Figure 1: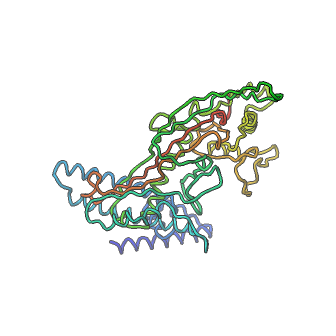
Figure 2: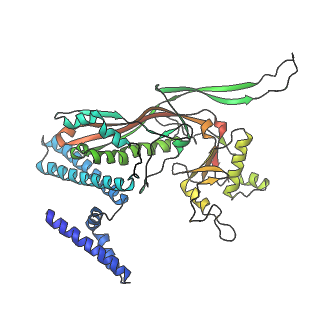
Figure 3: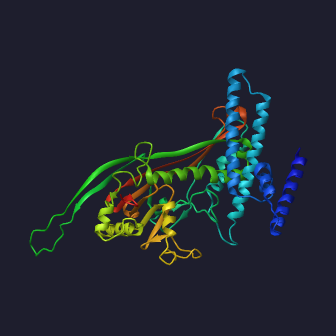
Length: 440
């Protein structure tokens, strides 16, 4: 069977190279393209030979995980009805395990190729690399009885923005992986508590004035509203085969690409739009955490500005922030909205924000633009992130493995869980402005 698979793979590769030559000669290759479209195993064979990308691997891994869950449910049913797991089910689980391991190896190969460090350049350890080097994981590998292992992973990279801490992803971020940016701009501090008691500034009346010697001094006033923000858990789990759990390098790639990414993706969404109701974070765009920009079509027109020109609105919001003594340090837009603005041209067809061939940093009116899919389309946030909000980190990413979950021990499966604990407090809503990008 293995021999025939390799013969098919070699034949497919030969057909692929022949297709390339035919295309160069101007020959119609649509029948060959149709063949590949209808034979997914052919594309898989090409990918195994190095012709493919991260998207194919991730989609294939989604399918394997779905099969694994289905077979696990089937095994539960057999245990409930006949008191044991059938031989066919066991064989199917073993075959799925082999597929999962092969996909993890391919994922590792792609990751190593795209993140290969330059000579003599020391790279910070990824979350997965930290996990597999931990002594508890080594002990878990050697156990012959049931057990579990948990490791809290540390961020080892610092940056100069708001004293924040983040994980560096060297090289190109492939496929559908979102580049996280919101957290990097927030001031981040550690906490050892399960809740954050904080005080929000409401109104500050500055009565400071000149006074003659011996005269009564002016009294300023400030009002506050106390609040408590609980530390929330952001977590998920998935079942993997024991073969994958025992393979150091493949497991490290799996942790980085699936588990840690999943947690951080949800964290970014919550930082922007969490509704504040437990177990959600209270995000930047949640009511009470910002000052509405307050502009309408009529009010912008009255100011001599265009209600349909997004540059005008954002510029006015930046100006309003400066007038309130909270000079904006960031503009947050939906990714699609940012690219609509990036592609804006003048009357002569020239791009306003830079030629397509130039490497232009995303910025508007001298402020960096954070383009995030977490933002609702056709909305804009402008403000001073370093003053408006604080991110409180209770625990970094914690990854745990266990073969004692449900029927894992009987089926040769391992549950892998990733979790993070944190809270976001918005102390100064006046330092943030938010609203529709195209006001009514």
